[in-house]
Structure formats: structure tokens, C-alpha cells
Length: 375
Image (cartoon, rainbow, N blue to C red; front, side, top):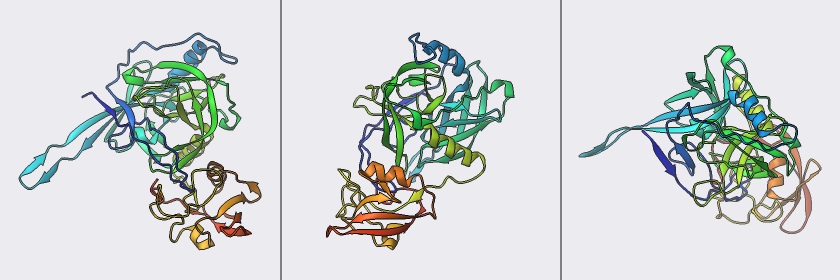
């Protein structure tokens, strides 16, 4: 069954901090704020390979080098039927599509969490036509990263090296490979349009450090690689901002440094952990805790029982430094907190609503499953 899901809704970025950022998500699931292609792939699709030059390698060279390490992922999910008195509805099977990156010779493959969320079966198609069932090894909705595992011959696996996403600069050339609209191995090229963007994770937390690109990314590209000029993975293609459901030249990839950190934890059998403060920040200007409930602060500006509440932070407080690092925005706050682990204690320099400068020690918690600030 082939189905195209197009749900275009703005979503709010919750977080360790709850900064409000409106984006549109490109996803492979059902009941999400998503834009995603759900079509059975053709493994014989002809790839699109440009021949323009990137820094060091042409797009054609990058495609030839890396495409064997990019897989097409088909996900089938079963929606249970419902019974209500005299009426009942049968169960339904949905089919979604995304892409993935071979991570190592042990059969681990990285993709987006939203591609495999709720999967009943996951099937991986390799470039040479080999097909294999995959097991979902683990997922992290907070970063939209998942690891799936296949049991195939090592000769079938062509891992792609991951770049240091913190080195990305505006104007750097990039190449995206994926399965937009059911066309595996499709290749597009562009540049890094911006760095340090914040995007919204499937569980409404904020993913900092995202890479923005003008390379064409469409439904079905989710989980595929955004490659730098050397052919290394700069991030996993994750979202698009659009009003039509198709690429408008504003796409986002999760940063490779985060992808690798989360993937290594999952492969090691550990639960990815993320530091948590428990405040909802005003989206405009400085890192100021909102003054009232609303605008996404469903559980209030300071979540009851959170590390922030225990430390005495209150609505209207403005955080200007964390352990001496200047904080000038909500995004900056989220990015800095993201560098710490649950259990770490940080010193925050705070300007109170009464304009007093104080220092507050906050012992960071472990992020709840979903954003308690509502987005």
C-alpha cells in the first residue's frame, strides 16, 4: 500500500529550556507533525548525480564513494482496530520510507528516530539490491536518532565516516543522498546555509547545533546523510521548513557530533542521557524565564519539582552565564546545557526581576521522556 502523509503544522520547541521555535518536521511516521513520503521503494531507481565541484571532490565522486553506504528503509506499522459498541474498525497497516547510513562493519545503521517510531517491521534495501530485515537496536526521541541493526555479510556493509559538525561553516558545500518520493539514491547538492540552528525533536525538546542547508530535501530523505565536501557525514537529514510539503530550500540536519554520541551509547547498550533544567524560556531576546503560563509553558515557567525549582529560579529570572560562559539567548542556553550531563552541578549567573545579580547553583536532572513545558 502506498500512502502520502502531509500534515503541515507548526510545532513548539520545548527543551531543557522550552524555547519556542516554529518549524515543520519532515518525518516518516503517522500521527506526528510531519511531512513524509510513504511509498514502497524501487531498488532499481536511477540515481541523480550532479557533476558540479565541491571543495575537494565533485558531487559525482562523493556519490560513487558514499552511495553504497546509504540504505533505503521501509517501515511497516500496524494500527490496531477499535471497537465502540456496535461499531468496529479493522486494523490498518501503514508503510513509511526513509534512508539510513551504514555506521560500522557490525551491521549498525543510523537513521532518524521518527523514521522507525512505532515500527512493526523494518526492511533495509542496499544499493546492489540486497534486502535485509532490521532490528531497532535503540532510539533517542530527544535527538531524533535511531540505530537499527542488520545481519548481512561484512562485504555488504560500506560505513561512511562522520565529520566534526562543529567545524561546519556557512558556504561549505554539501551533498544529500536519500529516498525522496520513493526514489532511492537520489542525490542533491547545495551549501551550508547556517549553523547552530535549533530544531524540534519528536518529543518536543530542542535539538541544538543543527545544520541548515539549501540542498533539496524532501519527504523520504529523513535519516539519510548530509555529506561535506570530503564525503563525510555532517549530519542526518531531519526536517524541512515548508508551506507546500516539498523542499523550499530550507532543510535541517541533526549535527553529526550529536548523532555519533547518541549512536555510540545505544550500541553500547546504554540509555542516552540529556541534562535537564526544567524552565520555559521566553523565545525572544535573552535567556529569560517566562513570566507566566502560556505560549507553550504548559506546566508553568518553572516546572514543579525540577532542578530549576529546587535551586530557587523563578519566573522572570534572566540567565546571563553558566559556569562563566556568557549566555545571550535561549538557543545559547540550550546549547551550553547540552554540554553537561545529568548530575552535574552548574553555577548560573542570574539577573532577577528586581534587577539584582545573583549566582545560583543548579544540579542538573535527567530529561523526562517528553517536554514537560508542552513544547
